[in-house]
Image 1: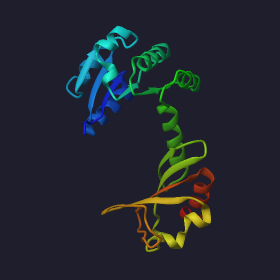
Image 2 (image 1 turned 90 degrees about the vertical axis):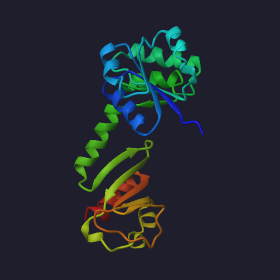
Image 3 (image 1 turned 30 degrees about the vertical axis):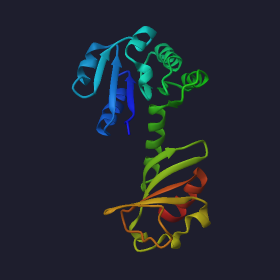
Length: 221
């Protein structure tokens, strides 16, 4: 089965980090930036790198952009270039276009022009860090929507030796433990009989209110 091919446009801190991780995951990545220095820095890391203006439709077509499965527009601070690039990518026929937004208004414009996914790295990271600061057992926090969230909670010492049935998060709080990350591996869709140990990590999905209640009444007692 053919592996997906990605193009990352904009090789600043966010774009280069994302492109490197895609390479680490085994995918082919074309990197594009108008800054020759940024391109040179990534030349030994990515599958291909090109110095080019992504707002030039002829240039994008000459690079065979429409053949890529996903294009990520990670342009740093030029909102006009970001929007124009996203429009061209959609017009050319790239299957999936993901674009970094610099503000809520920028994000709304991107959604209006039909971008498949808008990401707010700075905003989202700020939210995650804030949640981690106020909750000592919270290891990670991902907002799925305005209502639903996935969190990772470490198991405190006092819950070691208890099984999920004892906590009964679904019946009592409405949230679900979808995985338990243990030292020897990950248990996906754990059963009520699965035992918890100190420093296990529970992956929990639910509404913000459900998870907050479970965390305050069970984890952070």
